[in-house]
Amino acid sequence: MEDPIPMTDEECDRAMAALSRQIDGYANLIVRVGAAVKPGQELVVQAPVERADFARRVVRAAYAVGAAHVTMIWADDEIARMDYENVDLSWFEKTPSWKVEQLNSLAEAGASFLFLEGTDPNALRGIDPAKPAAARRARNTECKSFRDGMDFGRNVWCIAGVPVKAWARQVFPDLSPREAVYRLWVAILAVARADGDDPQGAWETHNAAFEKNKRLLNEAKYDHLHYRSSNGTDFTIGLNPRGIWEGGAGRTVDGTVYFPNMPTEEVFTSPDRLRADGIVHSALPLVHSGQVVRDFWFRFEGGRVVDFGAAEGREVLEHILATDENACRLGECALISKNTPIRQSGLLFYDTLYDENASCHLALGTGFPDCLEGGYDLDKDQLMAAGVNQSATHVDFMIGADDLDITGIRPDGTEEQVFVGGQWFWED
Image 1 (cartoon, helix red, strand yellow):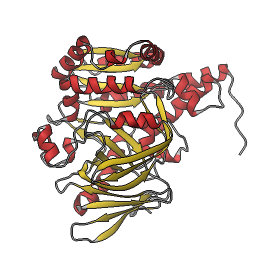
Image 2 (tube, rainbow, N blue to C red; image 1 turned 60 degrees about the horizontal axis):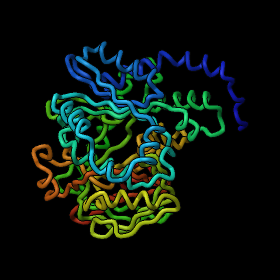
Image 3 (cartoon, rainbow, N blue to C red; image 1 turned 90 degrees about the vertical axis):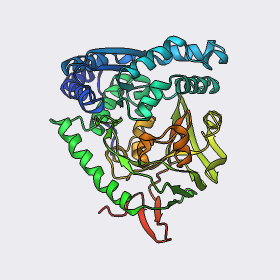
């Protein structure tokens, strides 16, 4: 197939104007369905300054559903890089008191948090990874009400993507900046099911599709899963006897239904933190704190990472694993068929929100209370005792090769296929 004829800037502008209705629909979708904003509620929006135009659409949509107030938190890759280049490591090891007060007070007041994700995958190339790692660790430990509010179902939160030029050029390196942004908008709207006439109805249908896979996995009550693929993955992960497979919509303790990720394609659980053995190889690059890790692997023994390597970005993995004593253990196991819109798009997004939903993945770090029976009623020590890992980090990495096979083993030793050739065994 020949490459398409490049679009002129004028054609890109007309094409973007034609997308305006869909983009408005996307803003409404993530406010109403993703962040589930209620009348009288505070909405907190974090957004890249480059996409202030879309942030305004989100604020407009929030007030249209009766939000009491919208707090904006702006992010900028270039300023972040300058900070890391010019400020000593010690400064990042503690979160400023005003930021702690801001995030904790908003969470305690019952705010909904919407994170509009759009960053340059290489924004921090060459930066000492210890600095962003320290900043992340400090925020996750010091902003306790904020972090616990999301982890323990007290606050609604949603992550959704918005394109910025540097990210778009990474995904579409052969296109002009304007056309790359346009093409990335088209891709984001498509995989978020926001390119049709009824995005909210599409998400109701999509959510219903999760129910079959969750039901089959929860009824099976596997003791452990065994992963194999030709790239060298040969790995066994233990599951919690009280574990629950979740996916699709989340639900807060007060019963509010929301979507933490838009898009989402995964069915996931929190595994037994003490049972993971063997080697797993990456299927896609990991983009973490503005740095890219490629062709990496982890070897586990007794639930811990005991060795690892990478063709590029090994030092990023070192800092992830050094976050705290439990960052070397797994908090999530997610299953995703290769037959999803994101995988079928053929695009590598260089963004975990998207790429994790194109591939089975695992996550180092903290696990989920809602993936354990009665988990919301337990504190962190009790969750640990029940097998759910607790850490100041949570980093997803993709292992779902096209030929991945997964076998489920029941407590009595009975085996049955769960995945064959990268898809659910029961898929047609």
